[in-house]
Amino acid sequence: MATYKGVDYLQIDSLLSEEERLVRQTARQFVEDEVLPVIKDCYNDGRFPAHLIPMMGELGFLGANIDGYGCAGMSALEYGLIMQEIERGDSGLRSFVSVQGALVMYPIFTYGSEEQKQHWLPRLQSGEAIGCFGLTEPGYGSNPGGMTTRAVRDGGDWVLNGEKTWITNGTVADVAVVWARTDEGVRGFLVERGTPGYTSSDIHGKLSMRASVTSSLAFSDCRIPEANRLPEAIGLKAALSCLSQARYGIGWGVIGAAMDCFETARVYSLERKQFDNKPIASHQLVQEKLAWMVTEITKAQLLALHCARLKDAGRIAPAHISMLKKNNTAIALECARLARDLLGANGIIDDYPVMRHLCNLETVKTYEGTDHIHTLVLGEMVTGVQAYR
Image (cartoon, rainbow, N blue to C red; front, side, top):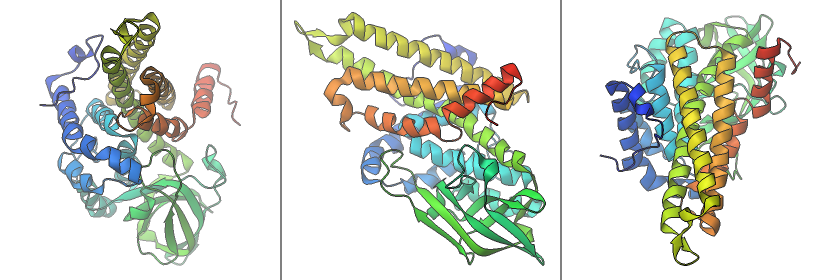
């Protein structure tokens, strides 16, 4: 069994069922056995650990909360626990799982035809096929409604032109879920690898999310058959509903990164001796930081747990997910910063995971809706006024 026991100051495990704890333990053991031994080198090399994909498919991690088509049909809470454990390994790996399940499989499952579901979902679940999600454009990040990518009907096909960027999995994807303006409004399309006019290229020079594939997509007179349009994806609201699924998983995932940083700092502070050969954990300023970290992690766990229960009951709203993503990402990033501080110079070397988590979390805070955008979503919820328009 895994030696890692997690962080559970408030006995939150008592609120989980035996099956939920088993799902978490399965993911935890996978991270312990398969992810941690390789992730440092993958991050340093700027290389995604692709050999883990079929393992995650076999364990049911891909599209875990989708029913049928070979998927595990887990609850939202079980899915969240998986995201938490995978991000303890690395945010880039969790990002792959989030994109595959929440941004590719979910829109096909929710808005696709039965033929599209039968063709893609089993292959995506097993990891035989990889997907990506094309919404963000070079000029339109926080304002996806400003997209300029366009699809025009031409007989029984659509002709697609435009560009997408900051796309996880872009160059390795077998299928891209691409959102474009049409004369009938925003629509979603399945664009397959090898389609003439469709090209992709990796974004290089990243100092964050280095164990993740990040790409740009380009479409030049790219002809898409009507059979590849998601028939029920009507309007920008459909694309945004996919983002809600991904943001929910992020709200859980970052807890894992925060837990890893906290536990690293806690153990280090007990072992590191200074001033009369006493552990630095005996100093008040060190204990204050650790106390803050464990308190905020506990609050983040309770927020995630309640959002999971609301989601399973069909009562969660996008603003709830904004609160989850905004709060938990912010505290995870601060935990990483405090842990780096407690480790001193050792905090910046790759013998410890803290700096890797810190760099990754800087990205996680701004993708899938920046902290500012989620703040304004919450502001609209409490005032009824849209401040971002």
